[in-house]
Image (cartoon, rainbow, N blue to C red; front, side, top):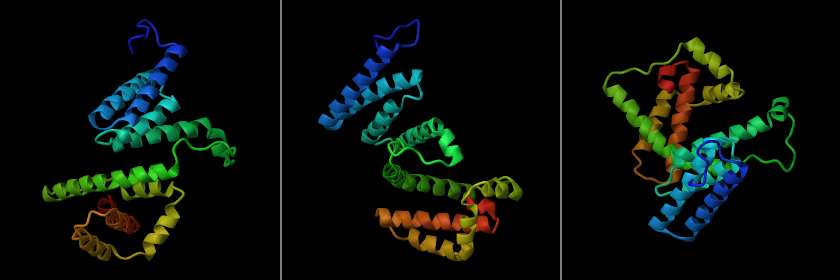
Length: 223
């Protein structure tokens, strides 16, 4: 921003001006379409980047950045997820004492990002990420490279540190064998449909097989 002092960090008033200008650019973006919208989105994001370079905990700026990243063409979902993580961590840090003691938050205190928005983002990212991971695994397989993982004891100890470990392993024990799950994945892969429900079912099968491999302690195939 051209009005920032060069010899010192911006004042509170200057930060407010940058934040307000970013909000104005966002409103302009919402009022137009196409290339013009993207221009306003980029201007708003530039101001937010300036704000965050001086104040990484600026929650309002991060929430606006999250909206703009989803509005961007093409949408920047992976960057949006990074902002979601940052916002949630800032929220947890702010309320760490209550969370540590298991106390309920005040009725008027809500997480900065709604659960439905997080789920929506994940639904958009997971199919892309799953395809990338599977391509990478196939490439490693063709090159004869095995997955490098820590020792069984190390991984088991890490998994046991999660509260959901027992329920995960209980579900895996009752599930199909890895051979059957692999056959189900192969049949699903032959379905050329790009419907979200089909992709989610396919991801669920991969997760179930991974958990079953973890239950069988074959961790090199679980990742």
